Length: 426
Image (tube, rainbow, N blue to C red):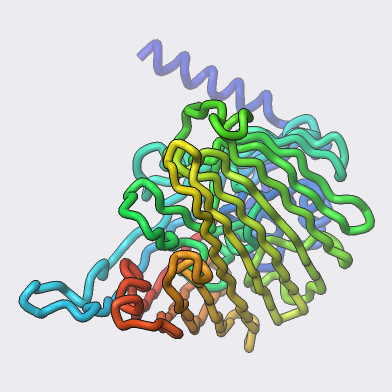
């Protein structure tokens, strides 16, 4: 009893000591003007999961705005249907055309973000729906010398692909393009060599900023091992004699001011923003020290009131390390265009066309490519931060010389994919 009494006394004392801290809680879709003027300049921080500005829920902030603390969460629950082509196999093998279907929890993220001393941004998020070391989704510290000079270290998104750099809870569709997420096809039976265009979350260090003229930059070094590794495991390249890391950079031009990392937000329907960008990265001794992968991407995105438009094109060159004794290099191409429009304040239909030359632009000896049109509908349920999304995607196959090539090209990819997802953010 004495211990409990002492703990209550300590908690009470701490609460009294924090009286300069202001607590803001809002369930409304449209915060008051007073709240906007006091908070918005301090809360446009990128946490990669949920929007902060104008959707802050519960926030602690000091009177001078130098200290900010914002807990957040994002829950996604989905129903999934995936139909796979039988690839000409005999029905005697009893393969199932319908697989990977049913209910899922794509993300269950709990985190907090904030600012300290007016210069340091921080973010930590745990994804309970993940497994292994991917449970730690993000953990980073960002020190801002000025708007044009920031230094970030930890685990965060690598500077490549508009689709991945978009806030996770504000993507146009509940499924990312296949051209980003699916592995390419190699003409060798090497199970450990399955590169894809996406680099996603990784551990590293980055310099970034944006000048007044609208030019933005991100330059960083990363492990190149992705979200599933939280340890330092890299060596020195035997071929290049440099650290076997992911060397990455991105250059953007945003002439109408910094573009929000969103593909649809009912609170941002009066924006006029434009982004064009170029990015590249080189992953030295990736794929279990088997390959050196060069990626180059070009991106475009625009918010024009209720209209969102975007497109990307990316190229990858895969070359094996000398120890593999394979002199050939392989070239891959992918990209997509997509659009969404708010027909009402809360209803947003969307379209996407996804293109993927998974076979290496003929460098693997096989032609043909995948094309995947998709349609989606997003409904943002007012005043409760709920988003209901429905999506259908068809994966087609064009230009293959042989039926066998056609069958192999979409291995592991559903011909018909349907997702209905409910999302809550706080």
